[in-house]
Image (cartoon, rainbow over all chains, first blue to last red; front, side, top):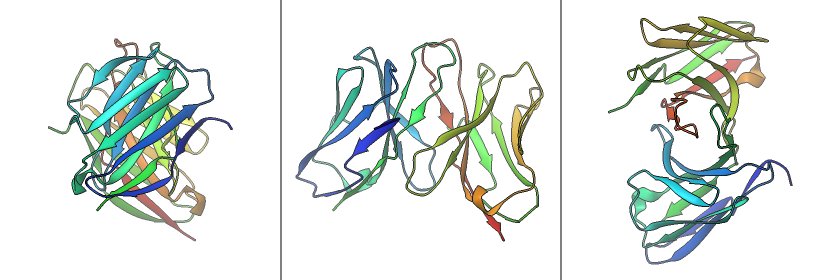
Length: 113
Length: 114
């Protein structure tokens, strides 16, 4: 595997379900990000992790819970989501330094029914 | 409040033509302006980026023009090809943070007709 991988690629879940999204980066980076991409809206930064420590939480509802066990893996735990949470969830990674470019994964298409 | 405004929302260009996408920003502290290209089923990929100390940057058929006083920047795709059909996002960030806190535009869907 190369670059940034995300699983699953598609997920349909009910509002009472609990599920998790997984991201893995194979680039040796030390920062990882979760973004939400909704139709006709700008990409929204949700969380940033630097060396496994959360450094940014962009006022994300508590029904989204991130976890970063090491600098290569990032999870987004989902519970009691709302239909408006349906979106493409993108993971990215970068080197934590000025100008460190972000590399994105292919995303998980989430549908909440 | 949207900090980066992008236009047009969609664009159709004939093969060989010039595609132009425009962005305007509000925060004068921004000092890094990348463009991302996203194909269906893929994540955004960095295409080209510029810093405000230059007014233009060219990489192959892709050029960024930057107007600091107007707080605007644009992407020009010369000799547009059907393979360029994708969604393009402009973004902006500050370099004083250790990571890029990118603020994205809403995207432009480009279709290059054969």
